[in-house]
Image 1 (cartoon, helix red, strand yellow):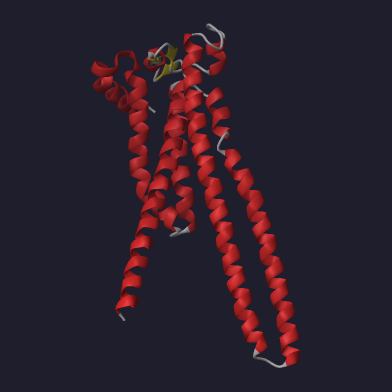
Image 2: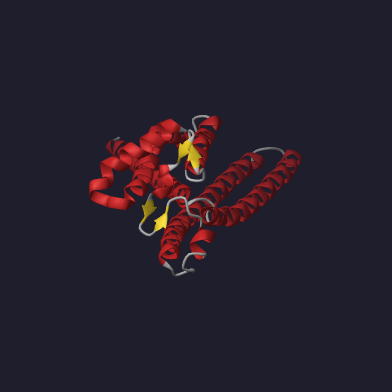
Length: 254
């Protein structure tokens, strides 16, 4: 943990001339950005669906970092000496404070309470953004599945019409069963798509019970994840549009 503390302390000293007592809080945000930059190749691989493990690794690799952040701002002593990080603040709130402690020092709208309300507001905005993107992705997946099912049913129907009447009947039954199964899958996807976005707001609960420093790490990495995925999706959509335009131009030339 000493290496982590030393790194945050160094970043804090570099930012102190500009941000004064909030320098350590800014150092935590900067440290989180550096961690996410290091994990970006894995996030890209997970977005492309390269391997099943690629989607889990970025989350697993962040757990030790979050644990260190939690411990660093929860322990009164580190390495046999007083934990100096606990004296650093974000505006009026010590970085080791929890929301319940802030409520006991001035109430909901006290100086410390307002800092936490600001953090919760940022978490809520990020969660709402994440939920909106999750709904959009779920709707797109459902539409794609429906289009694929319709196309498959059309192909099976044409194939069945070319066979004998007995084979046609059995083919129609198989087609109907496949379409029914696809409808069930679509309904399941719709339900899951309605629940998953709500999980984004679970970050609010976590931010309310962990130290302020850990809450800063949490909101920064969550915002990075949503922005990163939006950027990767934008690049993918743009590449597909360019590829489609090139293919269309080649077909026109022929």
